Image (tube, rainbow, N blue to C red; front, side, top):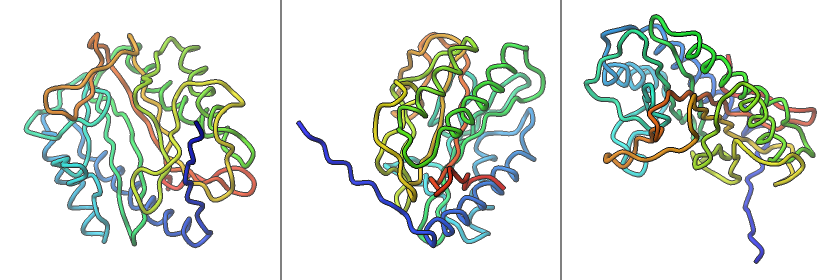
Length: 253
C-alpha cells in the first residue's frame, strides 16, 4: 500500500516568520530559566511562560491543544514528556524538562530543554548532557538529499554509545502553521532510509532518552508519559529548517 505524505515546503519568507516565532520561544525559555529553583511550583513556572509569551505578542499553542490545560509541559525526573503544571514544588536534585510551542504571526516554533535543579549525581548530569548532545548529532545530519533515517540513526547511535535508551513511542515532527505536520522523525532507525530532505522543510527534532529501560507508559491524567521502571528521562528539542547548504536552527538566539 502506498502512503502519500503531504510535506509543506516553506518559502524564505515563511522561514523568516518561523525564525521570529523561534526567537520568542528562545527568549521565553531564557526567562523561565531565571526562575527555576527549589520551592517554585510548576504552576508558577507555567504562568511566567504564559505572561512572557502573551506580553510579547505570541500565543502559547499548547494551551487548549487537544484539551491540554496549561501553556507549557513540565516533566520531572521519570516523567518523559507532557507533564501538566500544578502545585508541585521543585526540589533539589530534580531534573525538569520544559517543552512548549509558541505561535507568532500564524507560525509555530517548538523547543524543549532539561534542567538540573541544584545538586545531582554524575549519572544524572551525564544523562542531561548527552541527551542535548544527541540532539545536535541529529541536527548535524540535516541537509538537502539526506534522509530522515540519517537523523534518527545519529541520535540512536550517540545515545546507545553513552548508555542511554531511546523512547520509541514518541517522535519529532514537521512544523509550520500547525504544531504537528508530516513527517514523523523517530529517534531511532537505519541510516539511508526514510523520506529525503528538501530545502524548505522545517523539522522539530527532539530526542527523549532514558537512564534505564526505553519502555514508557501514560499516567491516569491521559497526558503525562513516564518511564515504566521509574528511571530518569531527559528531553531536548529544536525547530530546524533545511537550507540550501544544510540547516538553520530557528529556536536558537
